[in-house]
Length: 478
Image 1 (cartoon, rainbow, N blue to C red):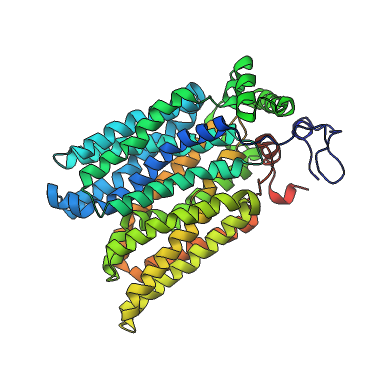
Image 2 (image 1 turned 90 degrees about the vertical axis):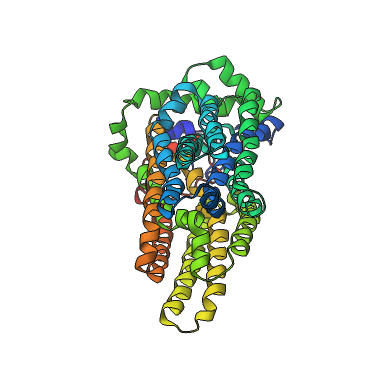
């Protein structure tokens, strides 16, 4: 049976909740979508566009960079993978920085790393320029991957939170698709300058959007908190219930907080930590970074056109991400994640089978088309759910007293997994192309089982309601 946030937190009754678990009329109505909410989300996800562009850049620009600067395979591998090192560097302090200087200033700080990084790549004279630029971009997007979903989740009303938070993945896909689409047309130097448009747009736009009301409330900036929340929800919306829920949660979380990283390892936080870390580990070991960073080399090994393969895959990411955004608050997080995990598993099985046919010299003429269908299917099904929803859930499940530390841990785990996969992928392919994709498919199967058994549904609940009940394992929740 559902309960109000106040009763969940204080273990008291709530006269505003009926026997069916539905809120009575005394509670605030769900607020509508306001122009400032849309603008704030758009400015925030400009950073996600930069992230998607950076992920696809190394695959698209490989031939041009190696030809112009004379890089060896090993030198270019360093360039391709060093962004994950930067991502880990940015991830470690991301939560604490966002708590200390605010969500807006953290996004602004991320662009201080990204803009010089892209300029270094655009005017690079040798491998050192490329590597330093790529490392700086990694630090910037390491901050972005934590703060953007957290900011959007904290400014969005519960009935629209999933769709708005998943807009992050839509912009990642748009950046990824654009770099794949135009990367085959223009030079790698011009390509690295185009993305600066989104960086500058975010840098300027941040001056015109509000700070997270929950962050303001945490700092006891009461007047700014109420003004900002009212602005985001609409001037005619009664925000009293939501404001009180936020205050209650912050008061109790601050009372219980030890403000130490080791607080994460208390039993009451075990469930959200397992869910958050588990989703990020399984996301990466399901092969996402390998396919994104090395799609061109996969198509080459399968004797399929890299231009057709990468361009088609990039374009298909957009409708898939839009579908995921629309369905997220309709079908719920769990169902969409399950569909995505099963779809990626089957797609990678198809890729593994295509390389098995090639190795056995049996119907190997089918390898190119099967690989193309498999990689395309993987990209589409991954974009629908597993790409963005783990970040949505990460932004929802952690209580405020450990959100900074837990968010940093989860983001660091994601970037560490990305580094492991991107570094080891070429060695795995030399060992066995078939075995590589069957391994990734197995991990996607494990992901589906993990989601079915452990991942909670958070659709239609406020952050305060989620965080008040997330300290129990599923078997402990009535």
